[in-house]
Amino acid sequence: MRIRICSPYDILQIHNMTKKLDYIIKLTYDKEYKGYVADVLNLYGCMSQGKTKKEAIANANKAIKAYMKATTKKVEPQAELAKTSVNINFALN
Image (cartoon, rainbow, N blue to C red; front, side, top):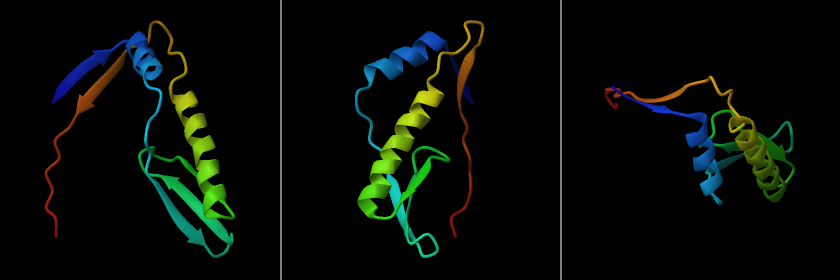
């Protein structure tokens, strides 16, 4: 297991350098809603919906921006962030 300590400054610098990021959106038709659910697969829990595919994607774009704004808020100066990687072994059936 590797651990890398990142300061809040590092996180903000990474965010400020990135102008455009790509996301995968899964569109699923919901019969009850009579529209589409847009699930942003790269961002856990980030979802939206719309009556048309175009509207669902537009709403998902708004949700992505709100998600990124919430996750990149200024961290307290005394806070310490850590990044870790975990190896998981499992069998595919």
